[in-house]
Image 1: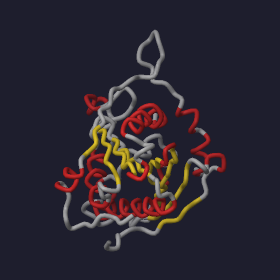
Image 2: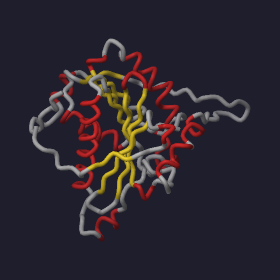
Image 3: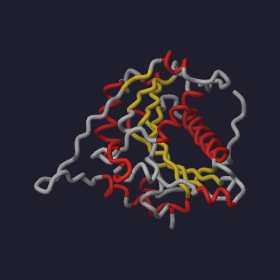
Image 4: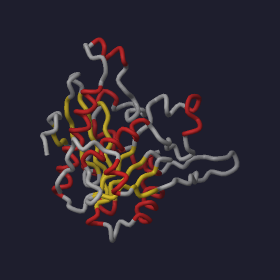
Length: 55
Length: 195
């Protein structure tokens, strides 16, 4: 399959709503939790064998 | 930084209509299979990276499929670990290239569920109505991998275990892409575009 073919369908697929009941069709709302991971937590849970990328 | 053990990668042409929004790269792994890497451009200089084997291009499960154990054993490999780390290092090299071109670039990683994790009969408690899957194995691996290389003083780790998404927010863009803006954008734009 040509790779370019994959992208023509993208817009149609992206707009698909999730049907949550038989009587109504609406976008399902899921409550996702987000949190910022502190620098300390990152630094304390990684191997010191690796160096951070320099940007 | 020590040199990453990775595969050589090449940029390839995608559909012209979408080339501003999706960049494509390809590389070949040690099993002689070709990977396709998709870089999706979102607002706020957010880039989402997805990849899959070219052989699986036609499959709706292309982001989910893993090599079968028998396949690796037939090629003389006990595990696919060495291939997987090289794949991640290759993706990281592409990320570095993007960051060089866009100094405000932030990166989103979504740990796509394995086929078993996406199966409601096996993993229903972690599958959400919006089709995301909580706490996938790939999400946990990407978490461990990114913290090896991305300094939290350069990138803030905005994490959502319930959707298996990790956003590395570029701190040079923190005035625009605040945690609240990022959270709303992921929920209202990025997640709906995945399903």
